[in-house]
Image (cartoon, rainbow, N blue to C red):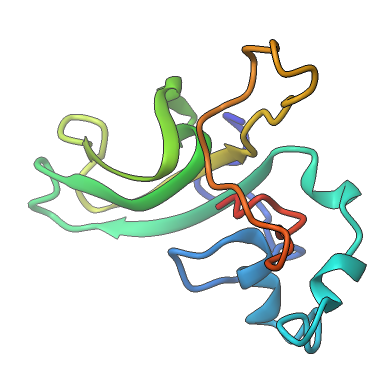
Length: 156
């Protein structure tokens, strides 16, 4: 994770998405997954790609007065790890929940007049509802029989 959050990392093969978004929402921004909101088409999406962690990253230009800064995350789902310039600032025990908002103080973590890289690793909630006595299931969004769940578990 530290490599993804270093300035200059080559992310040219990554999708550039408008955030906040889910993984499937980001892919839809690029024309992938046509008509998935029609009928039960969402059930035809492959699920394997969404069982692993995904990353969001960006680079910003820190102004001369960049000594005080705050990063607002507008809805992490479900677990996240936040890295800035190669350093993990928040772990999965800090960034957890269903579309939770977080503000992270970056004061002292950014160098004035430089490029800073920010990377967020997200993972889906644990959903092990069976057997019913299993206590490892996360309290997250769930869907009802007439609304099929998205394969990415709304991760993003």
